[in-house]
Length: 344
Image (cartoon, rainbow, N blue to C red):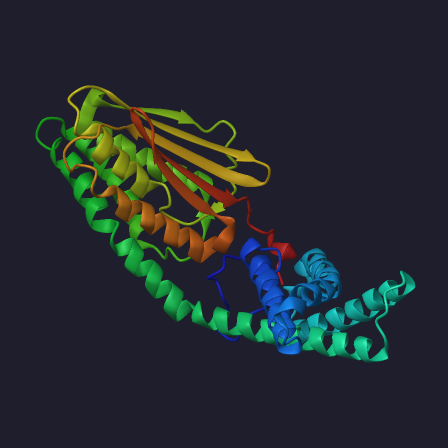
């Protein structure tokens, strides 16, 4: 599955027809158009309810069947050039409308010749409008805009990340030069991640490896005060995720959960696959005191916006404060890289 923001450099492609956000927009748009049509046709307030039920009895079956057809055929349609795919979708919706109307007639629903023509025109009009909307939306999320937003978001991460890492290495230079050398090698690897092109999705295994390196650097600085519990036995390492989706949250966990306390603190990382979704749950100690937690919101909002840019409504981030811990729960659709021979 391509990310929502990964549009082609030329014309945008068809919308991702299996994405929850796309399906919700189609449902809302068609029902909204049906409501407008009811108000335009019926001027008496007392008759609006009956007019709506009559309209919904026709619109909803066509809408649901149409969405189902597009969902089933999505892998084929999304590989077509934009114009070919758009014309194919228009043809599919026209055929679906005519066949469903014929089925309704057989069930005893009085559609009539004028009704058949009206339904066909309404279907083509709405399909064309929706294709135009998704085309304009894709242009709005074109590389020039979406990549600039991602770069701005990631720029907010880098100063904190690099400052903490450099501080950890400097603490070893004089006392333990060999460990400092190893830490510098880890830091160099982290620099490469920050300097590379971070617009594309990355394997979850690489993101977790990055997080392990980061936490190893923090352990150098914090010693026994920092303990990490990894629960990644059921992690789908090939799942594609936005780069730097976990590290800023772990940085927050260290800064807000471990540093304020003089005792040992435990950061828990639990990543698993459930029902076609990747879940990542991060926990760190929490004490409601002072203003040390003021920066949590920036990192959480940062990740939430990048998840929306990549996955639209199919991903979410929730945070909550438990009795003695702060928890962040990320949910993302499980998508692995397509084999090279399956790409068009």
